[in-house]
Length: 346
Image (tube, rainbow, N blue to C red):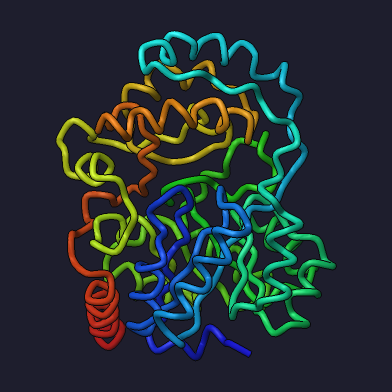
């Protein structure tokens, strides 16, 4: 079975659902010696199967697949006021807002069946703790199971399920927080402190995530006890990433000068570049994933088609300005070279 400690380069590429996390990106990072990761979120099982086949065709190196853990979906009435607020945006974009689908589980059962029938080296989870029987089923077919946690309490709960490793996600991370309780205010403990607190309560291997962008950052978390470092935002501008052009440009434009945590696009807390959509709608957005995500999907698609970054969910970590337009394999190798130098100095 795969072991995190066997990675030549202890860097995990964050899955980045919704486009940036492409087959080409996962292949490039795994080929370089890190761990490339596919995002199962928002894909049909057929699409996920095709992407897994694509990675296998591109490399025989280990890779992972990340899956959203489904939770109870709020009643559609929860988003009725927000749907009304978004009507003007829909009219301006010439799109129709969908009716909320309370049965949306992101094809959980089908994706778990796929991953047990066609095993991959690593399966990671976010948005909650996977059921114990799912952990056991994946381990029986040879997959290592990783749970994303944001607090020591979540780490304890996940460890009790028998997972093989924990991804410790700090508040500096871009994209969705992996909080188990979507209604809870996300913990603000910085990654360094959170990593230490989780490490004190478990012997499981830890993957540190949240605002890591340089070799020095990687060295820092490894020195603090992590087995590997997970980076996502650092890869957004690589040519292999599926990041939309307007999204990539926003990472460098002066007007996008900060990140904020918002529910405006999905109904779940997520960190991204502050833009007009967030400024106009964040205050009214309910905690109602995935219903809010369904409502904003056509708006985001229209904004992408128009190249309008102010209508996109520009998920990014706090060090987004350090993202570079260089090949992903080269970036992975350079990050590790810099990290190794820093580790030797220490």
